[in-house]
Image (tube, rainbow, N blue to C red; front, side, top):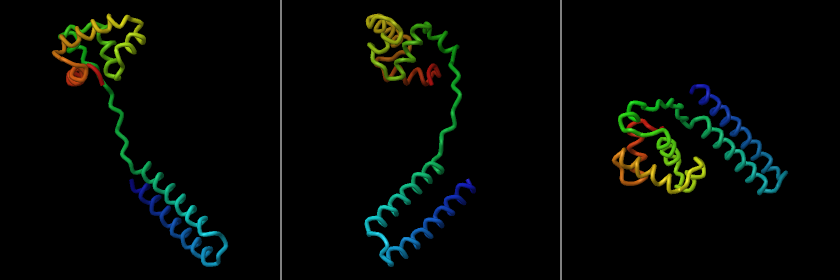
Amino acid sequence: MKRTIFLYALALGVAAFLLAWLEYKYVTRVFAPEIYILLIAVAFTALGVWAGHKLAKKPAPASFQKNHAALRSLGVSAREYEVLEHLAKGQTNKEIARALKLSPNTVKTHLSSLYEKLGAQRRTQAIQIAKAHALIP
């Protein structure tokens, strides 16, 4: 973190120097005013993007452990679990059917069975319950 702050301070110092240099060039009328405005805008945009990238907190990758005991106790089959994974990705019934090479009616059957086993009434509720039981990440 200290290194990032130091680099940011150094970049600001360089930017201040460049602004003073641009002001000198502007006073001596070397370039048109639009060029100066463009250079300043590009410099500060680049500095902002760099600082945002460096200072933004990146979430630590969490390792997900599937709860096999909950799967067994709920009685979720392997195929139903595959449908649940695709459901959690936000796919429609037709997309799930294409991905798993099933008919849409079979997907509906698996979903209704999942809803019953999870005690859910709709897709979003099934996903929330599955996440609460650590069935899906």
